[in-house]
Length: 156
Image 1 (cartoon, rainbow, N blue to C red):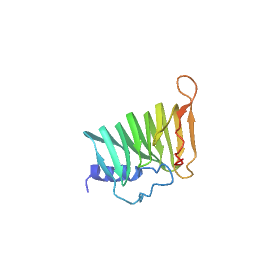
Image 2 (cartoon, rainbow, N blue to C red; image 1 turned 60 degrees about the vertical axis):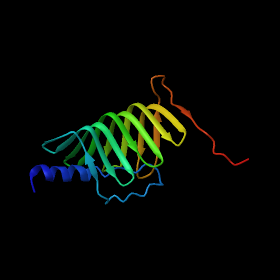
Image 3 (cartoon, helix red, strand yellow; image 1 turned 180 degrees about the horizontal axis):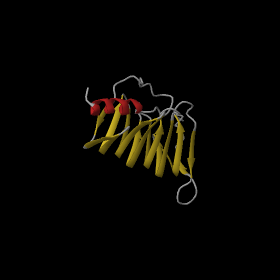
Image 4 (cartoon, rainbow, N blue to C red; image 1 turned 30 degrees about the horizontal axis):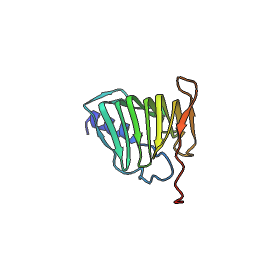
């Protein structure tokens, strides 16, 4: 196997796309499909240059540029530009994202928009633990988090 193919396999193994919310059931062993306009490999870093996309089951991670690192136990993905993380239930949008695969934490920064159905929340930084489903969103340019929530219809 060529060095580039080995690097691709290593980096994309890091990228087992994180689950957002408890309803997702994608098997972390499911194949990971990726696309990019260009691919660069240097040292322990594989970079997909975009638009770049990783798809595993019903989850999608997309950005202008996605880099996978595996250095001395530090395994993470970094995404820059038009970042989207999409599941069947939620969409997270931001300018940048870092996913620490060992810790199971994804941090999205910039103009962050989180949608779930019609519900929308905005801020400047979203930290989400994929293991515990704990989330924290911090204020945007106004220093505040904003949201719009639609109560579920009870049929009355």
